[in-house]
Structures are given as structure tokens and as C-alpha cells.
Amino acid sequence: MAGIGSELLFTLDLTVAATALMDFGQTPIGHRRVGAVEGGRFQGPKLKGTVMPGGSDWLITRPDGVTRLDVRLALKTDDDAYISMTYFGLRHGPAEELAKMMRGEPIDSSRLYFRTAPFFETGAPKYAWLNSVIAIGIGDRKPAGPHYDVYQVL
Image: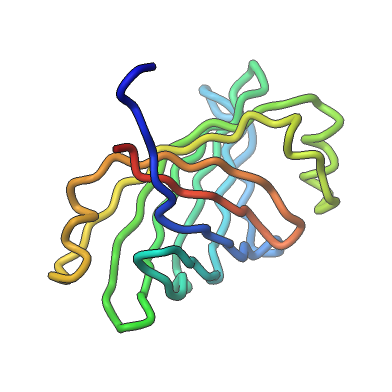
């Protein structure tokens, strides 16, 4: 795709509360689960900070085995600015890798398709540029929680 480039915004590591996972069971559109995000860290060339507790990850695993992500996070930069980060995404891969992931075991992330589309919202003048970027995230699932490399599309 000529003319499309990207630049790393930050890496993001989330800690999810495995014991607080709410399982809604099989709904008409798939298996619904909701996880609480306890916190985490993000770091990149233009911003870094902490993921505040209170975020959530609304997951639905469709009948075809694809999991759709719907996540809301509050980021707090190291210079005390708040940034809302929301993202939607898809995750799928071989059943054996997904089963290991669900058990909290290390996985071969190269065997997963794990992509997100983050959007940002902030009133902080220093980070207002985030309000008008398109971003993509490439995910990996670590035992403690998801890891993402988040890129701005240029």
C-alpha cells in the first residue's frame, strides 16, 4: 500500500484480574466475558505513564472462534495528563494456542491474529494531537495480561 506508513506511539502492558472475570455465558451473538483491567504501563517516544485501575475488556467469542475486543482504558501520563483510550479488535488463532492462553500459559504469539484499532481522547494541550490520529495495535497475550505495540498511522 503505497503512501501508508506508521510510527510507534508506545508499548502497552495491561494487568487483568483473572479472578474478576465475569462470564455471561453463551448469548445470541457468542460467548460474552468481561474482564477488569487492574492497571499497567505504557511507554513510547512521545508519552509514557500508567494505566489506571477501572478499565474493562468486553469480549465476545463468536461461533466461528474469533474473539471481538471492546476495551476502555484511562491512561495517566508521567506528567499527570489523563488520556482516554478505547479500542476494538479481533483475536483468533489455532485452538491449542487459544486454550493455552485461557489457562494463563505462555503462547506462540506469531500464531495469533491479534489486531486493534485504538482511539484517544484528551483535554490536555500537550497531548491534544492524539485526538486526531488513527492508530493500530498489534497484540500479544502474556500470562499477566495483554501486551500491545501501538502505532500511529501516518
